[in-house]
Image (cartoon, rainbow, N blue to C red; front, side, top):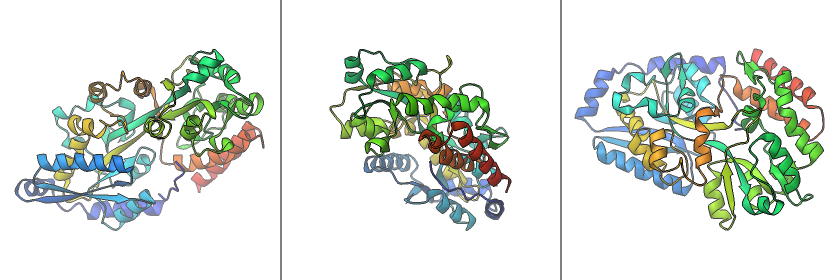
Length: 416
């Protein structure tokens, strides 16, 4: 989440130039080339676990078996993924198909380097099958620039033994979570709640009382509505002393804190499930939907799409790959091991994730989730929010002062 954003006006111009330069080959020519000659297309993405890499290798092999005239060259960009992608796009050497995080999507769509995919879609592709908020993250002005390959929402992870020993029920509301945390906290050995004090995790909470974190593509998180919505996060840590960050107990992230028994409850994503199974196999835990705030359900969603380079000279083949990977068959295999959740509702149902003991709460959150994406300036906004919010979380200044300072700085950078 802490990525440096380099999409300046100059970059937009360069990317747009690369786009127009690379559009000389017609779709008709691409189509004939696809039918008559072997075609090699490039798929670029970031690194993954060995298990995920092997699974993707199998999915791509299946695709090639069904499309014998298309070969896929898979490139893994291990570091500075978006910087590398942008540099290659500028230089006219961008991959035909590549991963795009929803967080990065608005700014890249703005440059014109992404191919709108609507004209390639056939009726049997079933666009309506995608979870709506996840698909909308890659749409603008009625056009679709990517189809989400997988996602995760956030859910409440709770230690069954700790809740049972404390004689408390799984909290259904945020007020209940605050009260339950008091009974679960044991001095500094165990905290009732493990919290991640960053905007990526707090965005939906910040907007739970009607405020807007981003307004007109500028920071708006110093508004009274947002401040009041986030104040309970500060109070639970400083006043109740029933919540802590992972680093406060020597852990690197919430899943580790939870697995070590340093927090009775955390809010994490699907990625925590395989981690806990492998690292803490004896841990007895459950998941539930994130407690409601003011009677409303809320959670975050993090998603990644396959997108097409508008300058690709192999668009028809590129679409064949995208449509297979995000189609029902390809997506089913890709998400079959549970490393990520399928963005298609039918695939989630077929794999049983909507009824899975641990994943059902995550799937249930998809229709109402707030996707981690909002406008071209969100990277600037989040950096300034996080820098100042943590000082309020640690008691160095009031939340109101911290967010006011962060908002002023963010909008100054945006205006410049």
